[in-house]
Image (cartoon, rainbow, N blue to C red; front, side, top):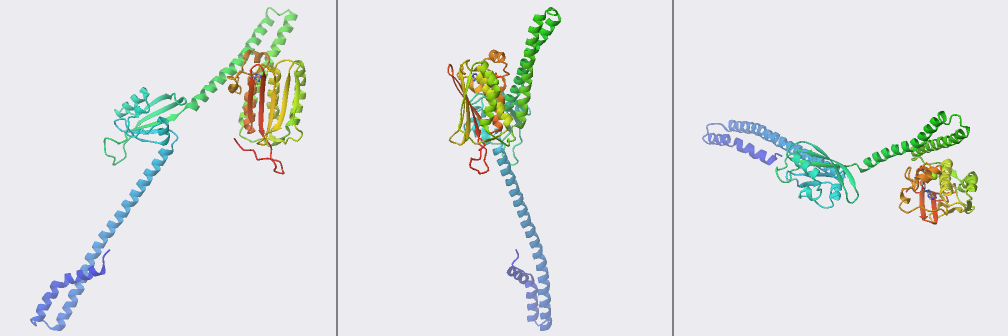
Length: 439
Ligand SMILES: Nc1ncnc2c1ncn2[C@@H]1O[C@H](COP(=O)(O)OP(=O)(O)O)[C@@H](O)[C@H]1O
Ligand SMILES: [Mg+2]
C-alpha cells in the first residue's frame, strides 16, 4: 500500500533541485517574484505528476505480488486439502494398503493394514509382518522395475484368510526427497475369502444336486431296461419293479420341489411377511395332517400351550412348512413307540418359543452346527431310506431368517432331541406387544 506521507515526500524530493535553482535565481534577482512563483508552481505540479506515475507503477507491482501470493496460498490450500482427502480415502479403504520405499521399508499403512500385521511396521521391512516368500519376491521385482505383479496369498492366522495382492510401482509424490521414506511400491490386498467360499459352495451344491438326482435316475434306467428285457413277461417282477420306480420318481419329485421351494424362499428372504399367524391353530392343523404317520410308527403326540398366545407376524404357509419339517423329522428319526412333545410359550423377552422334542437316538454334538447346511445328514443312508432330501432344515433356516426368527437345537445322544423355533410376536392394534427387533 502507498501512503500519502511518502507520496508528499517523493514530490518534495523530485522538485527539490528545480526549487533550489529557482531560489538562487530569485536571490540574484534574475527573475521577478511572480515569474518565480509561477515557475515554482509549474515545477511542483510537474513533479507531482511524475511521482504519481512512478508510485502507481509501484502500486501495480505490489498489487500483482499480493495477487500472486494469494493465488499461491489458494493452490497450497487446495493441495493440502487434496492430500488430506487422499489420506482419508486410504485410511478408510477396507483393503489393507501399504506403501514401501526402495529398501522395502513400510512408509505408510492404512488402519486395516496395521490390524492385519498386528504391529506398527512403519520404518521396518515389510517382511517383519508378511513373511510369504512369493509376496516378498514380487515386491523385490517391482522395486527392480519389472512392473505390476499379482500374487495369491493365504494367511493362516488368526482365521484363514485368502487375498489377491496387487503389488504396483508408484511415483513418489512431487517434492518427496529421493531415498529413505520415498514411497515406490504400493501393496493392495483384496480379501477374497467370502468369494472363494461362495464359489466352493456353489460347486458343492451343483455336485450334490447332480448326485442326488443321479441315484434315482440310474435305478429308473436300470428297471426300464429290465422291464423291456428279462422281466418283460414276468407280471410279479413287473409290479415289484414298477413300485420301486414309482418310489424313485417320487423321490426325484420331492427333491425338485424342495429345491424350488428353497430358491423361492431365498428370493423372498428380505421381504418381511405381513400376515398375523395364530400358531396353536397352525399346530393343530399340522398334527391332524401327520396323525396317520404318527400312528404308523406308534408315536403319541403330546401338546402343551396356554390359550392366550399372541399371534406372530408371518407367512402361514411358510411357518406351516417349518413345523411340518420339524415334526416330520421327529417322527422319522425319533424312536418308535415313544412320544413327541410340542410345547409353545412366550419367553421373558416376549418371543414365542415352540419346541418339538422327541425321545429318539439324539444327534452327536459335532453334527449339530451343520444340520442346516443343504444336503447335510447325520446318517445319509437312513435319511434316503426314509424319503428325506437333506434340504428340510436348510428350508427351515431360510424361512426363519425371513421371519427374523431363530432355530435352536439341543440333543443328547441316547435321550432325544429338541428343535426350538423362536419367533417375534406380532404388534397388536393395542400395541401391547414389543416391536420385533431385528437381530
Ligand atoms: N429329530 C431328529 N433326530 C435325529 N436326527 C435328526 C432329527 N432331525 C433331523 N435330524 C438329522 O438332520 C438331518 C437333516 O434333516 P433335514 O434337513 O430335515 O433332512 P432330511 O429329513 O430330508 O434328511 C437328517 O438327515 C437327520 O440326520
Ligand atoms: Mg427333514
